[in-house]
Image 1 (tube, rainbow, N blue to C red):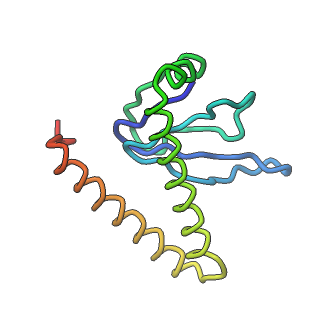
Image 2: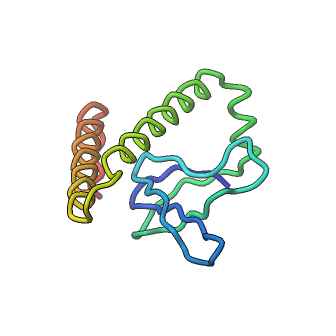
Length: 129
């Protein structure tokens, strides 16, 4: 399965060789999760908060891309933006104290909240229910 996060937060985890769970990422509303075009999942996905998801089978989504290359192109651009964000996060947190890493995390959350509000204003859609 692959999916789109409508509401809430999903954590990506990986189990280390010694059996410890490590959170390797968080996906927020409008985020995509799952491994496209891959034989196996490299991460586990788990709700970190109450979530609302839109799910589809991986083969069906991959067929959709074949029929809609412009959507595939936009998804690739979004994944490249996500990769840039991961690199930025690694640079921010590398070698800092715990308090500095926490401040960086709060900064990232605030930045995402601002982007979410801007997206809602641009589309005229609100997340209020």
